[in-house]
Length: 95
Image (cartoon, rainbow, N blue to C red; front, side, top):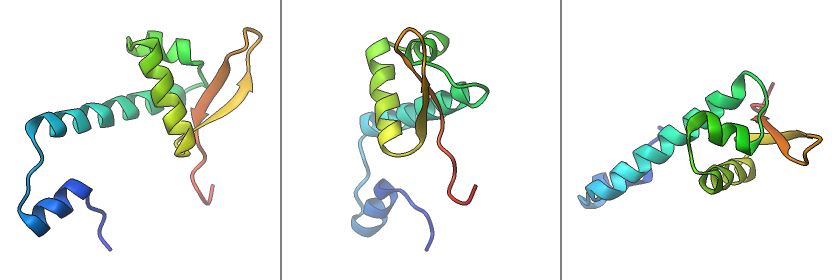
């Protein structure tokens, strides 16, 4: 089965196209998720470190990190002396 987005499936099935606003938001979210994964790929980082490096709002960064952790794209590795967790990319299945 080919991997397609929900938006593409709906467009193909019903001829419905998402609004430009929705399309732009999805692209921005995808870009942010990729940049967070890239930021923690070299070495695990805390949420404040990720926020500072990517110049994102701290609360927004926390939301992304917690959501990505829940969906197993990131994992908490260890707690720092300051009480923050370090986050790294989750291990791929089969690794």
